[in-house]
Image 1: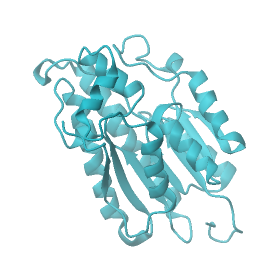
Image 2: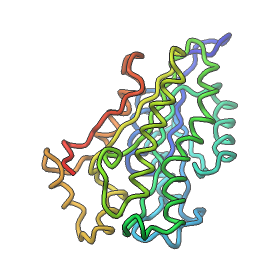
Image 3: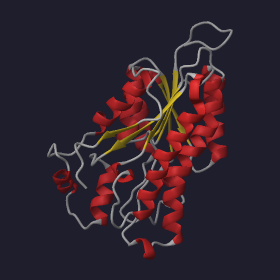
Image 4: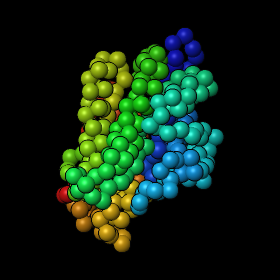
Length: 272
């Protein structure tokens, strides 16, 4: 890939939610494939919800440092809240100033809260789930797509992580489910708008994947061990973060340009 009027350069990726879980696994895979990777996350000491999120726990600065170290010299940490469009724009500006442009964008940031039926869900939970899981993807696309449109030839890739919840209503997680369903619609509209630009937009819907998100789900449902979610998968086990990351890596680097506006389920045959 090369920017118009410049010599060949190394491709660049931005990954949000990159401090742990699927985001960290994606960042490591992209770095291994030769991309410079901007790892974006918001350590818990800087998060407004850090002290009152119920079973959910934000990533820490140590998590972000460890994920960056996994990427070696190609990893570049950035602290930003995806709900803040100004902060995201600042990250993109820094990446472009240092590397020239952006080629690959992965929206992996998200959070989970719930525990009450929809009619008892409070305003703060609804707002947090929509802003963290849906508006964050919108903010990221709005900040990065113009940069990818400036690249010639255009081969940009935008991938957002939704959830199996986008296809199946989950009890006690109405706000989370609604937000993840919104991610699917957003990506499909984005792909339609990008049309023949050469930039693709796709979504991945993970099933029960080992990690902090699943632990939070288990606590909401009163489970002492998130391993119990393996019963919902036809494969009879939990999914590993790297299995989701390998699919995202393929979408970003190996999938044909004809694949856009698609939602790929990596859910182990989720049965709800």
